[in-house]
Image 1: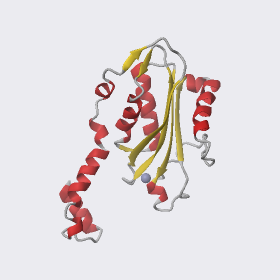
Image 2 (image 1 turned 120 degrees about the vertical axis):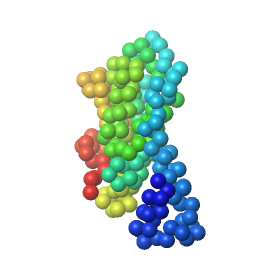
Image 3 (image 1 turned 90 degrees about the vertical axis):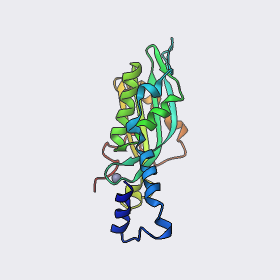
Image 4 (image 1 turned 180 degrees about the vertical axis):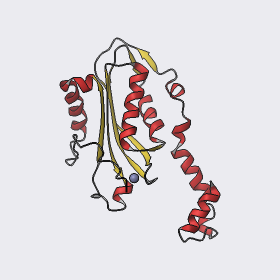
Length: 201
Ligand SMILES: [Zn+2]
């Protein structure tokens, strides 16, 4: 990979042998491997020992999980907050493991819509809850750095499964809970249309 990055630097009109760039191929390789390390992650290992049987059927919600991912169209970062909720039937996931699950899927080449669905589906498959809701709001550098969208625009995606899809009250309870917290962000639009994320150009 380092030789490819040296070639890339030359293609960009740079001199890969100048001092500041000498170790860049090594650093870029290391960074890219870390940022795509989610491909190698094993979900069972991530969740190992963190599934618990409970007698609890109220909404479990983990808000404001920071995430960083790479858009697969431009290989540029998109990052923001992820909110995950579910209503258990008889199993819950240790709370600290939810951000780990988000990382596993974020550390791949992604589009925001697929990332949102993958997080929701892994929770659904793992603990078979009554429903799962995932909302992600992100800034895409491929849009903001290139001036494609307004600098501060957020792409919002959601996945609503089971009771969150079927029951409007459950869904709005969840949306209220995450809205309360984000009251300082008046521009957010919870009903943004799908496909708003990274523009493929
Ligand atoms: Zn992009």
